[in-house]
Image 1 (cartoon, rainbow, N blue to C red):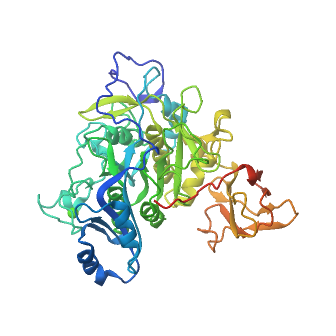
Image 2 (image 1 turned 180 degrees about the vertical axis):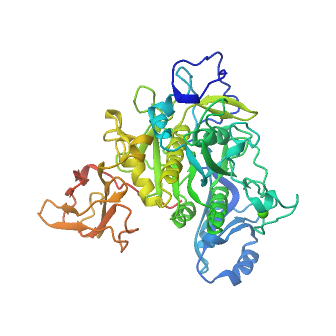
Length: 527
Ligand code: CA
């Protein structure tokens, strides 16, 4: 373990480093490979107005509601004993009240075994956090939600930066003082037990939290990207390091409720993945359009443009997928990448941060890269309180530092840079995002591209086909453009050839895409 590390002044020289790192409790990576699901359970999305008949539906199927997610008109459902999940999906989907039903997929913390051999806080230095800290070290007014394995609420480097539900803190033990259905959710919510106990049995959530917001300048252990921030925790990864899509949705539902109550939540950190395409999880993330969903890109070392991984590959405006870099400015060998689907990179190899029991540990994974990005989102918000998720997302990408190893492998081609984001004046970024696969001649298709300068959209954006036909892409929030003013410009087209060349162009840059050599970027397979 590492000895005392002074954070005062942030001059990195050498840090005493003696001894190994315990990996015993850390889960093995399962990013994106499996499509396992919880036996005997479904996630069911109901059509609007059908609530009266849900009880009757459950009687008919011999099922029962485990948990309702009212924000999304969804339920986690327990099936009659012995009912095969695939059969239950078909039965529920044949019901007119049901919009869709799917297995409750299993997900995993995205951490890999590592061999610590670098200056412990190299990541903070690499993203120019010390320079940014001359401008801001964060704000207690800014809240981030860590959706993970819990947190050590007694950790000396974390306890001052925990979000506090004051009604519960000042209320009576054992009583749901704020009336949200959860007893004693003082610092967050435990979606496994339905209570407020956030005990971290894995160490993963505590590690992530420290990178986002370990208290700085307190003469202890480490500093996070923010020295001041408020961390709300939602625990859904169990001692195994695994959880289910339904529990992740339960966490998003909790976060959404608190946002509606006025808590200034800027982003959620999601250092986990795996399982199949979950329409329910997709829809729950999409519903949180006023917050960023910052997510680990996955640890399979593969191209996510070709092999999507979830939730990182959901094509949603408020999602930021993160790749992991090493101290040598290369892409970590385990890190997934994607020219059109993984947005940005951050340090994720041999990252030193907080661990349960008031201790510290070094871990690697896109799990560890993600909280650098989430932390920077919070730091940007502290410097620009009026910025919304659109401007913050764009500053994460445009403020970054271009690295050769990331060119052609991420949307931004950049590693985040805290100083660059806070001081951005003129930094343009252009990237084609969606375009039709080959063989789609005659079928309408969507084109989209990111075209931004610092926090703002930068148009006009055009696409010229090989025939010379020109389309203008719009960032107006009118179909097929999902959101106005986020810098993603969209248009519907009707290709006349199956082998098409799309020439994207804007004042921010240009890109040529030949679709015959390229599969559909975000193919959504039914479970
Ligand atoms: Ca409560």
